[in-house]
Image 1: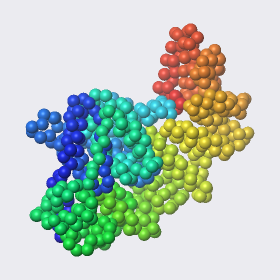
Image 2: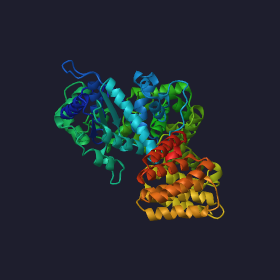
Image 3: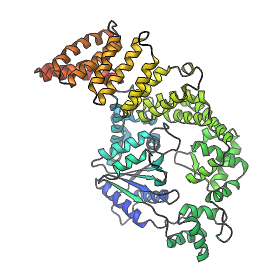
Length: 612
């Protein structure tokens, strides 16, 4: 039996570590970059990153590189539509918790945007301000700019390393931010290092387009970790076993692990010396370690297998055990190198493979029960701390996994609203798509969620529009129009037609866009209402964009009259914007500039929708 599980010695990876150090030297000199570390599970990505982080925090005395700051976040494997910005929130939360001085120097608007994903970013007693005016894309862009401003400020204070692990599990919004970052970095003293498993990337994996876009850029680099060669594996075994390693043992473990460091360590930890019969799979070796733990500890691991990373309070609530037994179970699992505690005080498996083997061993009914316990515990946590996007998204996931369709539907709608508030439009769209998929299976779905299917279709369409998928948005708007009786509810139909006109225009289909807008205007021909004002605003804007400036001026002025009558800033902004541009184009730049300044004032005071 070995004395410990892992090697304390950093084995091999000399070239890879040197390349990361070179990237760090470039970053310190004001040449930021992104580095992607690829490798199969257990090959040593985390170990390499840990060694590199140590180098950043504690450079060698012979190295003139200044001490750097390290932010660390990891992606969470929950599924689509879950926990937007998970690694970024995890990386930034310690800054908020300790009140980092860099935060105090940030503009108030920047801190307000950051507080949407890390509430502690605002000073104590400060309430989150209403969202600033924005259009379909500008709201998320504003948050991305705030994140970049923070990273730049941190990097100005000290060179900054942002580490993101398990990028293959990254959420839509995190991927979008990395794409933004790769295009926006300039002279910041910043290095971003992300790890991922290439074997997880199936043909349609959403990370593939990001890697194709970013890895080919000059400021990006890719490192691929290979298995250890026999001499490196021998060095690892000497350190783990504390003495010489005979050739037979080396050969047996090399044949079994194929040079994968984690596999080698786990085979040894399963009380195998390489001379007896090996288990038929690594999974058996891992399960031997799990089964040696007391029953209470094994039950705890089953809960963590579905929860993945849980704080003590949530674990105690969902675990349904007394405090003493919980502490003993945790101590056992940590002492046996099954669990670790992260910087946030949350418990997690030491390696994803350990979690996977426990999860695979669950019975179907057992798994559903554990998911339901976690979902209910998360619901209670939401009631205690408020509509946190991470908690609401996790609750929605666990209700779905538990097979509780009514609660999964309700939670998905609520989590989508939380995702929208933090500009996570991709996750919002996925959560609402899940809600639509459940709608027909849940009796009285509208009463349960507080919204109609028409409303959910409209919200989903707008989320897809904001996430950059106008084609899906259009199909959802067509479905929404089938849900409403245009003669009985012309205003609701017109609201869908307004969105349809906007989406069609974004696809360069001007005739189809004008047809949708005209259809909506005809429905409201004798109705002085907000919906008509907004359609008129789009009509004036479309005319302006077509270069039909005289018509745009006439239509915009008509829109202004109705917009002010119904007190709608959205229509007023659209009208003044179109009017200002058209006046400039027809030879009256002073009047046009006045209208554009008025449009800006309307946008600043008119709420988030004012520039849609």
